Length: 530
Image (tube, rainbow, N blue to C red):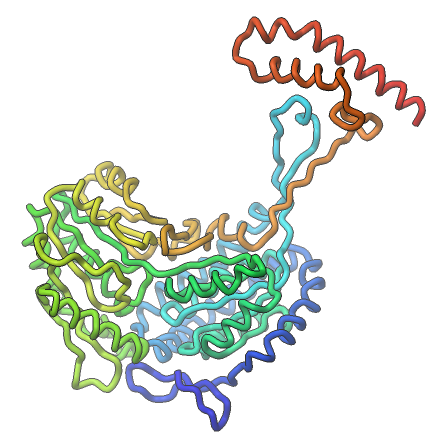
């Protein structure tokens, strides 16, 4: 991304070639309130359009995305560098499935949900949860998954009847505009889906605006700022933030399979995944063999332009990320860690290319830094047993995802349930974000709230509890006026309902029957007056 002050445009740069891909108009922060107002004025008609009409539009959006799949995958590759094969599969294909899943289950997720009340005073009433759209929502997204991450919010938000203000990353603005074009072509009104372009000052203006809720995906540091900025107005906020995900390689793991899986989990998208593997804890009995295989396979990765079908690893997406990864490796070297392979910028290529890097940490040496690297770097360390592996995996400020590698699925499940994270995969990694049913969340400093699945759709609505007393011609005994009879009835009723001594319960029956008869008599007199 390069702001061009002469034309007030944002220029998208191909990280493989450092050439311009295209440009979009920069949004001025002072224009944000007017854009929010446009969306707010359009919102009631969209809300009242009805779920069936919105489902038909989502179906058309899915069809359009499928037809334009290769064009959009190519644009993703040009803007942020990931190999075209990855862009087509883990971004576009997963996004088509996400749209399909959302509209397919919209009726079930958004319908009124009956609530059965257990208390005798209330059990004859009709009670349910009603899903109300929130209004105008803000979606601020990063550059590393410029299609799937936005659609995880946009699809459910529009289906639920909300209006959307969408700020894609300033590094992938063309993909952001392509997303909006797709929904407008499908039939979403232009003022219901509005794009804004810019960097932090535009995002800040959106957070300070009077939209009902902010969905932010990005670094933990920026997420904390977003939460602070939203706090004075009690803004509803969903944060999907950083990770420093551990992988545990058990003694019973197939080291050939697990080394291939860990390699993909660490290096796909050039390691630029919030749920990518960054730390590997290997049982000491398999550590040497696993490490040798991981290094050998890392050295065979083919690095180059993502549009080359033989490319496994593209460039880092931005110059800032390139500099950060260089700093991470240099810090590891100064700390005495061993660079087993990689660790250097690739000088003979024009873009932001960096060698896939494996760093070994001695158990008696410095600890793996508890910070998100977000690049083609993975740290490996041997452990004595599962207990040590779990302790080290959990010893982090982050808790987004993790993985366990084992030949025994029950063994893997037991370990997975002890890892402190929003999700854990056994014998796989990363792709849980593309499993549409999987609610996506983080704990610790990795996030607040949910994306994807039914819980992700719940984030788009006000879960309104409605309770209907169908007996409208009698008043409840707990209403005014109070008095000794009311107090006595409450005490007796509490004993009958909640005391676990059956003799005490039975002793209350005469008083209960007497009190009930008096209550019915009073209400009959009131009904005659009505």
